[in-house]
Length: 184
Length: 122
Image 1 (cartoon, chains in turn blue, red):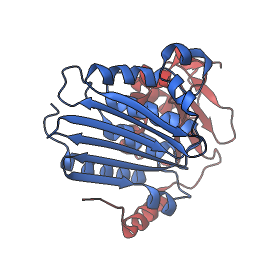
Image 2 (spheres, each protein chain N blue to C red):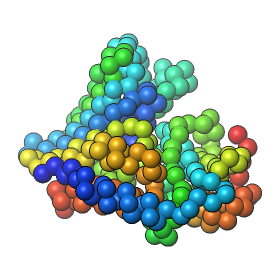
Image 3 (tube, chains in turn cyan, green):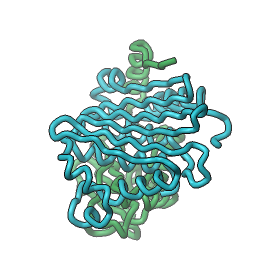
Image 4 (cartoon, chains in turn yellow, blue):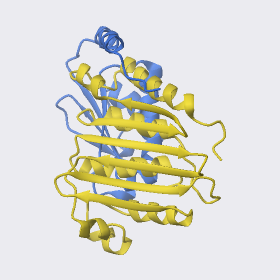
């Protein structure tokens, strides 16, 4: 995967498989301290500390555990190459939080890519899950919470053209308002 | 500067969607399911789904719900999409890029004719 936004989609898919009803995706760009942090938090079924350690190892995971594939080890390696880290905090029955951090300006740091498409697709194709998207650049912050939207439009498909237009517009406008012009 | 969807906005969107939604035809709800496992994403499923959503928007196609699923166990055939029209059989398509997705929407989802050349058996 060539974009961080694809990895975000991949990790959120793990949260979906874990039967979460709420998933929070936070992308925090700290230009002053040159850090880029991504946190994906869910209230799914969680896992033991032992399991959380195991899924970071590609040789343990690849075939035996079906829920999590190669996604986590690949992203962990990418973060560590860029003076960063990846951690998983999880508790059975409570949920899971994946945190990944990079040196923002690191030459090997993958570009963010099409983050708004990732968020839009998660929101519209999982009508039963409440998504909260937090995007911040230094002290500026944009929050998109689809809870009210999903309550109000509960009996309609979110991929009706007019609804799709509305959600896409909301996410893109909010994101681009604070997204820095130049990524690096 | 949090943007919270206002209730008024949502009520308006709701009415607009209801107004534009075509009276459900005999064929019933059209469903497109995109495989979004790690394998699907790595093979380009996000682009495929983007193309599907873009087509729905630009052509104003109502009555289609697009959802997603995880890995269905045919990673080498990703991106995989499945189409189900009403109570009909679910048809699975493999190695679907943006262009093939457009053809499937035209011929199968709208036209009702299965695109045999792209279909695969699970």
